[in-house]
Amino acid sequence: MSPQGNGAARLLSGAGLAAALLLPTALPAQAAPPSRVPAADGKKGQELPGMPSALDPEAEEVVCTPASRETAKKQDWSRQRLDLDRLHQHSTGAGVTVALIGTGVAPGAAGLKGRVTAAGEAADDCVGSGTFLAGLIAGTGGDSPRLAGVAPGAKVLALRGTDRRGLASADLVVDALRAATEARAEVIAVAVALPRQDAALSSAVAEARRTGAVVVAAAAPDPPSRGGSDEVPSRTYWPAGEPGVISVADMLPGGARPEGSLPTDGVDLAAPGAGVVSGGPRGTGHYLGGGVQVATAYAAGAAAAVRAAHPDASPDDVIRRLTATAYPADIPQLDAYAAVTTVLGAAASAGDKDAAEPVTVRDTSAADRATGRATLFVLLGSAAVLAVLWAGFALSRARARGWRPAGAAGTASD
Image (cartoon, helix red, strand yellow):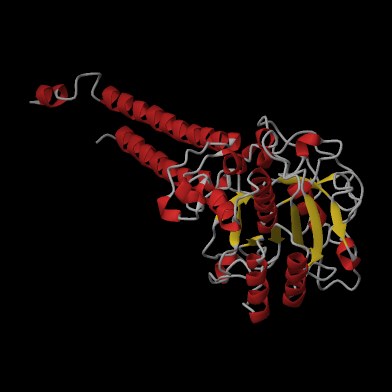
């Protein structure tokens, strides 16, 4: 082969290798947590301060999360994904009480006034996470109605499952579960995940279930700030691992779990958990939040919407609706609109998971289409590069043969 041919072949091989390396790395790049609020129209979003799930446990002084001075101008991807605008035409969760076990909730927060019951320390949300989650469950959106929660007609019973810094405590979670059961909350959202099963915790969950509550819990805690999740073996967290509890994990717009998520099993649902907008305990501004607790709040709001729309449904029926209508994936993805509006078969209503009629669910996410377009562009771009390089290679070979057909060169030399 001529030197020109050797060079072109090397160039072509290099291009193929580059394309092969490019394609695997292009897809995870879509899974990176966004630093901005994703706009519903696909345009560049607005930067907002982050909402922490906990405060620094090693800090000498507790400094509460300050008020945000920024306001989101558009509906974020998560509300679009859950189709909340259409959902609210069928159910707002009116008449349902959701007990939220987390860092507490500020009763007078924007979009939550008159909707929150919080006694004692539960009314002091220094971290801000609990108020952020309450907005996703039952907030009206205040001056931004398109940023309302899943069930803006529901009520929130705020209960502490953490200390003031946001560190979870098994004793506090047990006490909160018992308080929620005593208050007859129809939905109980546990926004914390404990590493060990506890007899008192199991008993409290079982009692809540017996009194008719739908219990929704975070499948895992937030990943550690130091070190990667590869260092943590897969395990079950509690109370998500208790029988009859809906275990919820977070997902990105493309449906994948965020990079670095703690590995766990037995997850029932995935819900939006990155680039989500809500308010906080101080001021009227907005924050950007994410994590498993955010996904848990969305699932709890969906449970409230289902309970309001189907008041005769048992807790198992509600759970069946949430899981049977979920968008099919490795971890079924919450579809709040379908959970409320889909007509299930009689067997499914009776809680028979194997006898349910087929359910048609929507492809809900414009963000998914954007991710697909980006992937297509990578594929087409790589193909175009290879086509151009192949054309160059073919031309160099033809020039070396003096533009004769491939078999002609050998014949002439004979």
